[in-house]
Image (tube, rainbow, N blue to C red; front, top):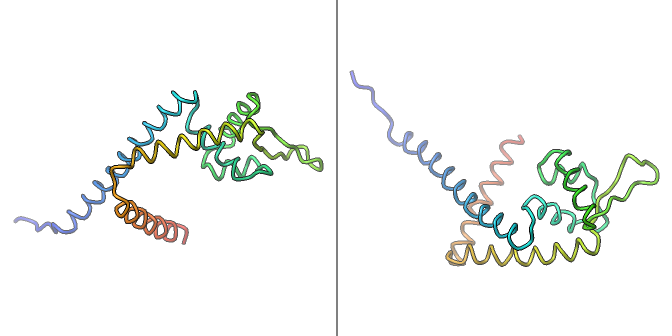
Length: 158
């Protein structure tokens, strides 16, 4: 006796896998290109650029734990990046006079200048890499991904 397979459910499940793989491959392609360009032009890494970007958002500095949460990485990763940036004069730790265990990390003038150069290049690279998509398609894709993100975060938090 043959069992009936619901083709619609099977197709939908396969499409979910295909969609996931397509999203992952697109992100991977762009990220690989950005990593290479960041390394070649600035001798830097994307995690380092990401940390500079976060520090740029907080001119008065940000606590290490908050930085770790925003960047979705461990405190150890943040400490290593902060040590490196501080050694190079790109960032400085500012300790709380009331509690020396607590500190904020902030960009120095040199760090701000470096980040601004990197951010301009990063923006240009993304413009170049996504130039083949017409504006309307970019807007639609942005909208669809925004809806997905909203629903996903709403449903997983609840």
